[in-house]
Image (tube, rainbow, N blue to C red; front, side):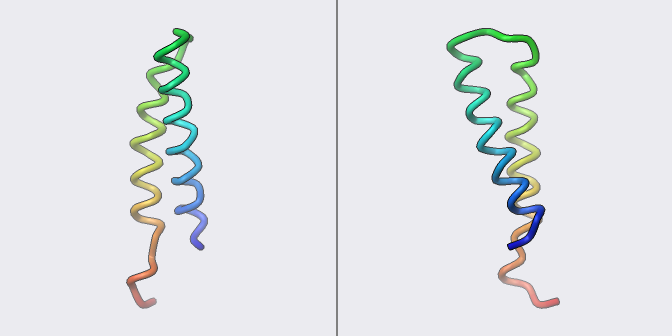
Length: 54
């Protein structure tokens, strides 16, 4: 697996968890959870190279 893909999946999971916690308990910086989700999805999309040949 590509390192970017794994980082993207991790960021997406952390961002979703941060968003869920932020809906229950307001905390400073909770808006960054949406940024983590967007960045994580992007990294997972560009990091997954199963269908290409190098």
